[in-house]
Length: 280
Image (cartoon, rainbow, N blue to C red):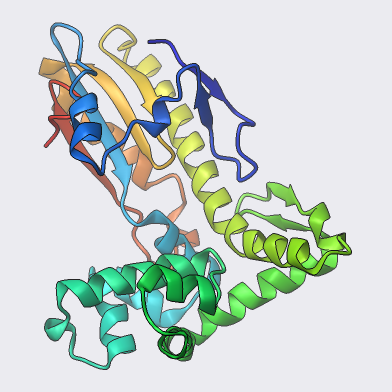
């Protein structure tokens, strides 16, 4: 399969793929996972996938400078567990699987500008509960709350947002006479700098890894097969997978200079296997 990759396929700056859309091979269902077993490494090669761990939440901490959120990542604690502890008023060790699941929905919902009604639907809770969860969250992470609000205000005033690297996304919908169109634009504007910065980071990583392969004269031994938003899938000659996997990981984790990360580590997790469905 030879997919087409589009640099301008998504407004956020993420790459898109078509004919076929290889970024949409399912993972959450049994049948979806079965399909992934059909993507097999060439003879003598291994598939090596590296994906950024919780990068949008890490970038939210970096861009907002929220001390509490930064501290969670700096100390290597589980962000979903910590947020669950705050929102549900329990000790971190008392957080159960259901609390963590709901915390995850709240964490990502906040980054996408999710309001009370959308959160209620996602959580299967009452409106009052959803309202309380949002209030608890923003009371805990005040600086993040202020950052998201100022991002919204900036987009409303100027009609665009910027990533950490200065790439702009225009929001002409902010001038719409229809309130629901403006509201939707504001929700997208909240997330645009975060998701856009993530898109910039992975593209820079792709370029730097490619330059490393050229320096090592390794174009015949390792090459990029696929980019799935925050994941890179390489095909690497089996005897060199550990060597190159470690180098790719190092590059991905250091695209953002340390002075710009506020001490929040950017982490890439590596898996490898004979096919896309069998990776450890």
